[in-house]
Each structure stands twice: as structure tokens, then as C-alpha cells.
Amino acid sequence: MKKLILAATLLAAAIANAAPITVRDDDGNVVTLQKPAQRIIALSPHVTELLYAAGAGDKIVGTVTYSDYPEAAKKIPRVSDNRLIDMERVAAMKPDLIVIWMHGGFERQIEGLRKLGVPLFHSEPTKLDGIPDNITRLGQLAGTEATANPAAAELRTQFAALAKEYANRAPVRLFYQVWDKPLYTLSGSAIVSDSIRLCGGVNVFADLKVTAPVVSIEAVLQANPEAIFGTLEKNYASVDLWLPYTNMLAVKNNNLFRLQRDLLYRAGPRMLLGTRELCEKIEEARQHRKH
Image (tube, rainbow, N blue to C red; front, side):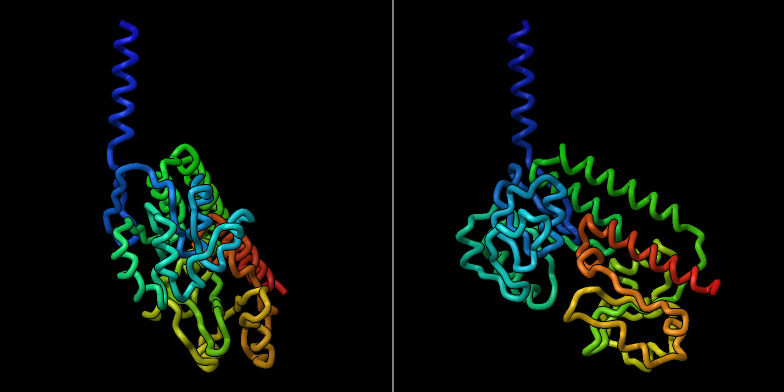
């Protein structure tokens, strides 16, 4: 009897393992694998970070130039420079899953990837809760739920705690500067704006239709934000360009802030750290009101 029970259990497990894996990607498209992916190509730095968080880092066989976190990601072979995908190299790697991020030139190359016949998962979180959701779904596709599900749950808990900490704080109108030549910002549809909202900030250009619109210096001066955010990294937009505009509230109140770029630009688990840093700076702007 025990042998029969054991055999039935093993058979049930085999059937369960053979069942197709089906999830929906961030476009709402159905992605189906007959078995967990073993050879994954990650076509974005944030995708690489999500896969590592999901416990599938060792399954990544190819990625893009700027995938540099975690440290192990630096050793993964490159199949793209973030602009052009090397289709021949992708095909030679024989992936069973390609995780894509559609931007710029990539959108025009997706059709070439589809012709390879490899399942594509489009990762494009536009809200903070989309990050743990991506981790969960990628874990399903890679068969690493034992790592992915707890990681996603912990991330949700941490974001919820941060939201509770900064709930009901006085709003701070701010300008988020992506680049200065030309002057790029982000609208309310960008995931960074979700971080801004969580912290009690108000993006002065949230209503613009384009995700990364170009604005003029005059438009920023007219909006008169209480705080301006740029990045710490060299070769990126410097908030110092606003120093001559001494009548602007952000300059008057000494609210020109610099943040670590990758912690907010990449829609991966490190956005928790970037959002926390953003919240702290916005709170600093509130404190400057008292002086």
C-alpha cells in the first residue's frame, strides 16, 4: 500500500511539473512555457536585477551593456548595447525565454526577436507594486518561486511601511530633472512619479502626456517648484544650472538635491532604496520651511 501511495504521489508530482506555465506580461500578453526557463536573456538592466531577485540570476545567459548589478551580472555575456540587439548572438545562445523592455530602437527590433520563436515577456513596471509583481511572475517562468515569492512579499511589506511612514505629510511641489541638454523631465506616467507620490511629493509636470517630455527653463521657472532633483553621477544633468535663478523657491530654500540615478531609474528591487532616499530629501525640503 505504501508503495502504491508513493507511486501515486510521484506520478502526481510529475504531472504537475509537466503542466505548462502561463503568466501575463506587463502588456497583458499571455506567455506560456512548457517547462521552467533554463536559458534566459535579459534585455534591460532592470530586468537583470529582477531576475536575480527572483532567484533566476544563474539562468541568465545574455544581457545588455549596462547590466552591472549585482556584481555577478558583470560577468554575463552581452547581446546588446541598449540600442542594437545582436540577433545572431541571441539566436546562438538558444534561449528559452527573452525578457524585453521596449524603448527607443528596441521597439523596432522586437519583431526580429519574435521571428526566433522564443517566448517574450515584456517587463515594464509603471507603478511600484509592479516590481514585486514582476518578481513573482518571473519566478514562475523560471521555476524559482521558492525564492521569488518571499522576496516579492518582503518588498511589498517594505514599500507599504514606507508609504505609511510618509502618509499625510505636507505636499512638496518638485521638478524632477532627467537631463539638461535638452531639459528632460518625467510625467506622471513614469514609475519615478509613483515614488514621488508615495513620499508626498507633487510632480509639477505630472499632467504632460509624454512619459519623458522636454520642457523649457521658462516653464520650470513659471512652475516655481519648491524642490528640484537631479542625479549624483557625472555626465548627467546638474541641478547647479538653477543657481542663478535666485527668485525660484527651490533655490531660495536650498532645495537642489542629487540622488543616485540607478536607484530610481531602474524599475527593480533597489527602487526601495531610491524611494527611501527621495522621501528623506523631500522631508528635508519640508524642514527648510521652518527656517
